[in-house]
Image (cartoon, rainbow, N blue to C red; front, side, top):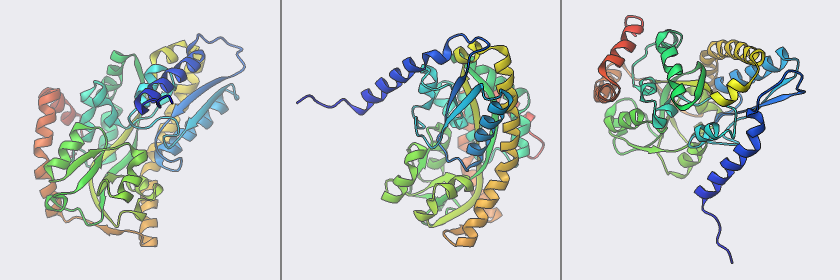
Length: 342
């Protein structure tokens, strides 16, 4: 009886097959074509800030092209998860993705890891000053090194800690297995606070929490609520320690083969959708937090200023290690671009 192919082999073959099937999407376009379908993959729920922003992009693109440009969205990792969505994009298996900024470090863009630094930003306004300015443009332009086109940034707000106990200062983390994205900075953050980082795709996180593979994780409140993590995590600690943002990315081959008029429609629709997404990020997180308070499904904790100082002080080696990898001048440029006090 023939043996079954390995999961890795199957995944690679699926990506290659999808890329071959999708090759027509990268062929030169001509006006008068009846329809162009843009395949957009992401890993969170439709009713998160990211999901809602991308749905707005779809609606605006289809409206402004009078239905000639169609955007097919695959949410919650239906096609590809955290570990393979960037590979799928590079192979042409999808046309656009909206990964978290943590995804760019592992594929050769360590400068993006600055967004993972704990306690770098005080407000979303500080983040937007960075992403909308010279630093943000430099980061997006750098993606051309791997023939990717960065189309814009947007937010999902600040992250908080969850587990089956409060996580308010470093000693609370000792011995816990904490799910993290594939980010050296976030992994080092967890180690600095005494925890053991475990890299898992977002789509597998709730199950891993439920079965005890990991003990806790970090998320904006909207992700915590929409994934139903309150059913498997008893405590949510509002540490506001880190930022979670995204970049919308496409492949140069796909983007450059679109007619200029189609690019203008999609770029304009995306810019408006990202403004919308940023406007609702705070609102959706506030709404999710209110729902958690109302249902009493999780115990909500607020660290004291003294506890936050302990977390910040323990985080200093994380900042120093990243500065050593990307250059102190780069990190100094970022600090100078932030509002005073950010």
